[in-house]
Structure formats: C-alpha cells, structure tokens
Image (cartoon, rainbow, N blue to C red; front, side, top):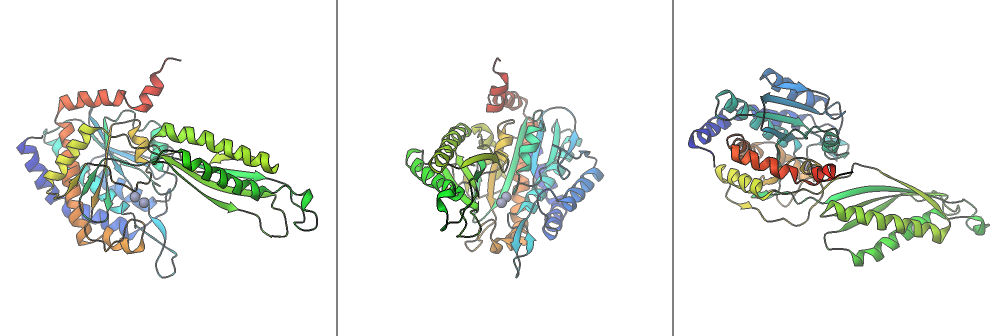
Length: 411
Ligand SMILES: [Zn+2]
Ligand SMILES: [Zn+2]
C-alpha cells in the first residue's frame, strides 16, 4: 500500500500526461511497422524520452530498434516492457500492416508510467531508476529473448507489462507456455515415382511419419502440452520422389523443463522416421526459444491493488485458459516480472490479431483503458520504489529464479 500523497500525485499526473500518452498511442498506431524495422517508433519514443531527460542506450541486445531509456539513480531499477511491432495482412487487399495486437497501446502505457515515475522521482516521493525498455519484434523473433540473453535485465529488480485484451476485466499473472520452434530438413533421393520408385528415398514420407510419431506421443503427455507442425516443403511434382522435405514444429508446455524433455522425444521420432524411410535429417531452431512466465504471488497481488486503484471493476488473479507464448516469459526467468492483460471493453467477439480488433487499439475506448493501465502500472512501480522491505524481498525472489539457480550451481 502506498501513501495517500503518492496516490494523489499519481492521479494528478495521470490526468496531466493523458493527452501526451494518448498521442503516443495514436502516432504509433498510424505507423505500423514490421518487427526489427520499427525505426519510426524507436526514433519517436527515444526522441520524446530524451527531451524529458531520460538517458538512452540504443541499440540494446544487438537490435537496432531496441533501447533502454532510464531516469533516476540506483536501485530499485524497474523495467517497463514496451512493445511497438505490428502485424501484416490487413486492409482490402490484405497487404497492409496494422496494430491488431495493440502494441502501440503498450508503448503508450509504458510511456505514461515512465513520465509519471520521473516526476515522482524528481519530487523525492520515490527512489530508484525507471527504465523504459523498448522491446522490438515480439510477434516474430521475440526481441526480449535477445535482450534477456544480452543481460539487459540482469541488474533490474522488477519488470512489468500490461497487454491490451478483448472483453472486460484485468487478468493478472502470466500464463504463457514455454515454446521451442524446431525446423527439420529431411534428405532423400529423387527418382521417377512410377518408372523407378525402387531407386528413390522419399523425404516427404519421413516428414509425415514424424506427424504419425508425434500423434502417438500425444496420448502420453500432460494436458498443458501443445505440439503442432506444418510441412513447408513437401516436394514439387507427384511424379518425382521428393528428395527434400522441410517441416516446422512448435512444441509447448507450461514449464521449460517439460519442453526440453519433449524436444528430446520429438528428435527421437524424427530419427525413427528416418530409419523407416532411409532418409537423413538435420534440425535447427527457427525462432527464439520462449520460456513460460514465472509468477510471483506478491507482485501479482500488488498489481491487483494497482488495478483496484485504477477503478477496474473486474480483477482476475486466477489463470485464464487458452494460453499462447510470449517473450515476457524469458524476462521472468531473469528478473521478477508481473504481466497482465487489460480488457478494452466490448470488441464484438473479436480478439488480438483479427482485423476487427484493429479499431479497438486506438480511439476513445482504447484511451479509457490506457488511462486505467497507466494508473495501475504506476501504482505497481511506485509500490516497489517506495517500499524498501519489498525491495529486499524482490532480491530474494530474484535469486530463486530458474536462470540464477542454473548459473549459481557449482561446476
Ligand atoms: Zn500478438
Ligand atoms: Zn501482443
């Protein structure tokens, strides 16, 4: 619980900065950009934060459109996980980019919180450093994976993000699945499929026998497991035995350790399919490995208080079904992280990534939710920055995270 004075200042500043963060939401919505090419967004946000006195480090994690903008001194160092990449395939010809996952809205709520925290720091009401972390390409490579691997979150005490969602209510807690994306290339021998089939080794057979193997494995996995694949190259002509086939798979589960174990079984299936057909294979990851979200009950509770402070009528702290994966999970392995979704209101049944969801990510209803998100997120950050006992507990939580457990084990 933060004191009345801080609460009152957060409310005043959230009103004061309201036109400014609505403008951030709108400007980025008007300039949808592909992951890793978000140059407008990165220039625009760093420009505005620099004007406000933030120190900018760019690039970050080796990515040109990633950056860290920080204000203040010392600990706690709080990371606001901003995003600003868009999605393709909208408009009458389905050739336009759009912010159908509302990352413009995330860029804006983190910006609003950064500005209010700056003022609270200047006024001596809280202490520490507020860090606006520009995380590109959430929809494609998962830029936070690169940032986490480069150590950008090692010195952070907590990280936070609020994602826009459909319907109503705030959903506190990250329920994202860990994921490995595996591409398998099968090599065979081509021959005339009718004239000399005995000379051929069918790479496509090995690819689809892998599907059969995975389907047999499905019966013996826990309910959280998802294994889904496509064949992206299955040969070109039916009268030629395919000498090359390529499939892509995503293997997901609630825990990183489960995914690693499933990967081992999956690769055994690939090997079996190759033995059956005489094909050979090689594999690689075709995208970053995403980790599950580690939840810290005390942080989720503080986040829930933040949403109550923001006047949110419906606050859920129980896991919500139907979970995908997010690179926020990788941050949560390194640094205590709080993640949530905030419903923007009635979206007529449409959800993130749908064309119908686009208008809900900018405009009056998006701005109303944005205001509540800024209040809740700032309450969360101020709640840490004003509480030294909580900061000490955060450092204990951090030591217990899987990443630090792994690196601290004796050799
Ligand atoms: Zn998305
Ligand atoms: Zn998203």
